[in-house]
Image (cartoon, rainbow, N blue to C red):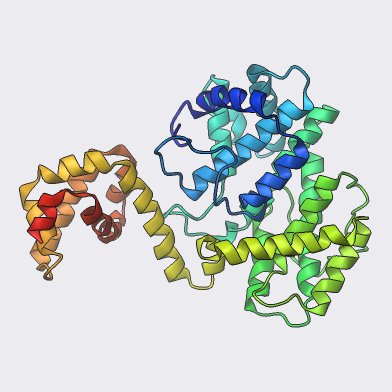
Length: 394
C-alpha cells in the first residue's frame, strides 16, 4: 500500500480490520505507541502498523499513516459496533467542522463525491512538513508536533457529538502558551530557544498566538483538562520545547514540576516525560529535521537527498530500463566517475535524464522550474542501481 496513491485509505482499512480484531488498541496504548514512533514529537521515524511491502515510506508518508491510524483507533475505541462506512462519514464531518476558511480550496469544496477520496485529500493537507523540496517555508517545522490535537479533538467530537473547533482551538492555545512560558523559564536563553518560540507561534492552526509575553500560569487555563492523555500530551510537548543536549537547568525543572502540580500529575510522569524526550532525540537526532534548522543549506540538501532517494528507489526498475537503453547516457555517466565532464557533456546528460524523468510520473519534480538543480542528486543514486555493465564502464 502506497499512502501517496489514490485508494490507499480503502486498502488500509481492509488490512486494519484484521489487525485490530486480533489485537485491539486502547487509547492509552495508542498514545504510548505514538510517542515511541515519534509522532507525538512531530517526527515519525516509524509507523504504528508494520510495513509489509517493499515500499520505502518518506517521513511525510509515515506521519500520514500514523495520523490516520490514530484516528481509526480512536473511532473504534469510542464507538460501539464501529464500521468502516461510519468511520469515514464521521471523520469527513469532523474535518468539515475544523475547516473554517470555506474557500474554493477548503475541505468542503474538494472536487470529488467519493468520501474516501475526499478524506485522502483532507489527510494529505493536514501533514505539513518541509520534506518536499519545494516547501521552503521552515516556519511549519513544528506543525506535526501539534497533529495529536486532531486525535484528541476527534475523540471529543465522537463523545460529545458537537462541533470540536472550540475544543481544538483552546487546546492549541494552551499548548502554545505553555511552551512559551516554559522557554521563558530558562535561566539562559539561546538562539535555539528564540527560534523555537517563533516556530511554535507560526505553526498554530486554529489560533492567532504570536507573542510569548501574554503567557503565564494565570493566563493559561489548565482546569478543563481532566483526561490523563491530555495532560501527558501537554507535558510531553513542554518537555520537547525545553530539551537540550545538556541536563535540564533548575528553572526548567522547577517549571515542569509546577506544570505537573497544576495538572495534578505525579512527579513520576514528569520525570518519565523528560526521560523519553531526551532518549528519543538523542537516538534519532540526525533524522529529525528541526535540529538542522539553524543550517538551512545543509538541511535543504539532506531533506532533498532523502526525497530523491525515495523517488529513485521506488522507480528503480524503470530507471534501469530507460538508462540502459540510452547508450550515450550510459557512457557519459560511466566517464563522470573518473573525469570531469565538459559543459556540453553535462548539458547532454541533463537533457537525456530530463527526458527519462518525463516518462516516470513520480519524478516530475525534475522537469519543474529549478528541477535541473536536483539532477546531481539523481546521478548520485544511479550508480548504486545500475547493473554490472555500468560498473565496467568505470
